[in-house]
Image 1: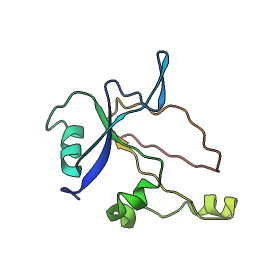
Image 2: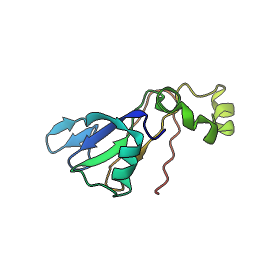
Image 3: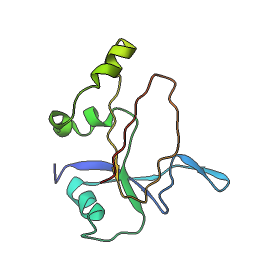
Length: 116
């Protein structure tokens, strides 16, 4: 995956897809090799801004299919409760200073986060 180009969100302060001061802000989107993104996260290189991978369009299956074998395709009890498998599976990876605002999706949704 190192040389694969991926979509990376960049903000000056970690806030994106959120209200900041009086504005609704969205991140700048850059395309860069996954290895360059990891170098930024691991502080091997410095670059201004807060970098993270985040999309809400089933990016795990669309942009990161190489990782699917390392991730469960569903949470069985959730699929059973909803009576169906997930419509989308999203992958999020970012710096500790990236902010995830509270959000709500109309379809049934389950979200987990784990700090690195």
